[in-house]
Image 1 (tube, helix red, strand yellow):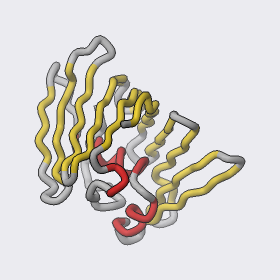
Image 2 (cartoon, rainbow, N blue to C red):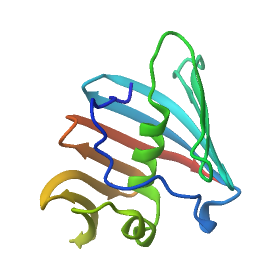
Image 3 (cartoon, rainbow, N blue to C red):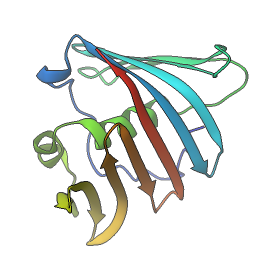
Length: 163
């Protein structure tokens, strides 16, 4: 599912659950393309310090469950159907797209930067490493499109419900 790179290409350290997300959650449709082709329903809940994620096929078959403790960085994952999902990569993609910009700026690694632009009402978040565009995220209503240039994949996220 989520591509696991040979080397660590993270541009920021994984972060705690922001106050505004605590005790909330999302139901989303994920569509991966590029290295792998996969679609799934994803339910995410935030209760500090935990991020809990459950992914299901559209037929309701469980694909994976993960719990990530943002304080200890401990990840507990259970995958089914021989689908190998990189739990930390899922959390990383989620944080790059939906964590507050100020949190990302505070956690960004050396030689990396993140900028957020609004052009004609379209919000775009761009991540650079050594001034080379590595990741671009565009937001259009309930639809979020993530393009990862280094690892050659795309992720389309449609927010179905927020609670």
